[in-house]
Length: 265
Length: 297
Image (cartoon, each protein chain N blue to C red):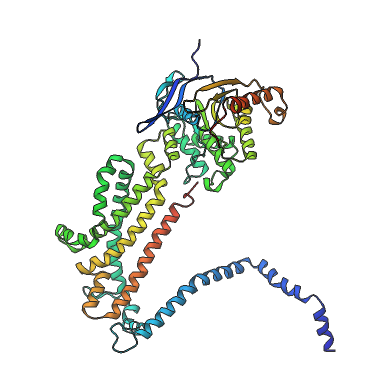
């Protein structure tokens, strides 16, 4: 059997503060194939962001290993670029400079100056942000910031693109627009994507597989759902598609019947 | 005949016409309109302090108008210091210089001491802000040293440097450095986790992190420290110069007191105040230019 592209093996995460310890993740194992789009969905507090941070290398798992192309992940790096929930653009740089910073660092030895400029522009084009390349983050809208964040991550040519609730802070219309853009980019570049979300429609629309997490503490993977929908997907047609509806209700049932967040107010 | 046109005028829509005319003029001449707007806003900002000043001067004039008053009224201050006011660039023997040269000498000392403090302060602040151990080791010492009044350093520095000028510069340095260190350290400790994560994902090295994340992210805090520092420097230089002598606005004031030239003291105080204000505005201006649009994302 061929080795999986990305694999999480028996991940345990225990936070200890003083004498009290909280187990956040319990025996999480997952394999991801190349070019796959995976969503991780669960109620807030189920440790899905922690899981993403472990894959990113920003957090060390208490037990368990993450392998990427057979190599152990033990620290952050540009091969696992993260699109952060709150965009995390550097406010003192223009959008161009924000992307360029990543390009300059990752391709410092492999691309010439002119090539790096071109590559920066290519990625800004990909998210349709060339028009605002000289604007600072404070001068553009939330959706635009997130697009620049995506461009910055894509520009690193990551082996896995990690999206941490990338559209959570956006209004519904902007979110739909960005989802379409992410689908288009995924179709074009065939990236491997791991996305955290709490939006059922978003998960079904974008993913090849949906990983559903049980409630924390001590969260684990409850179910993994295949989404056998043809690509390219169009949200309007899908609204009445039988497979879409079946997948959607399967996730809903998992989240709201079997694993309702009891303490949620 | 005369009554008719009058009646006609009042019946025709004269008023709307009169309303339209200035609007059309304004549209044709936007520069003039902008100028008028600017003048109006300038007046609204300049007029209130001028009125306050006027009242203060009148009050002062009345209170000190008796011939036996120990402090001269403004009118006498102006007449007695007229020579100093109109000849700021006068060059004489020794400390007998125009006021411009006194202030210039003081500013040179402040510039040198303050620049040294800025460099050392930002470097030490970065160290303390970034390293837990550096903070534990240095912070208690900083907290004690910063409470020592600036002038208390002067005898020690005179003993060390055996000369007035470097001693004064050292006093400026030691006065200005504490707020710069402390604010820089706070700024660096408050760098959002997000920026640190970006740096980690990009694998920026220490030098790149310092230049591309740390300094720009902490810039608003650093400039707060720099602004407090310049104010304290200017406070300290006047006091230090009173003791070390030589050319400088501080010694000028002390010299004027020794020769009972009260009006000269008052003029010098006004100059000191204005220069201090300008120094503060200068740092604020630089801060605004450097940290433009970067306060928040």
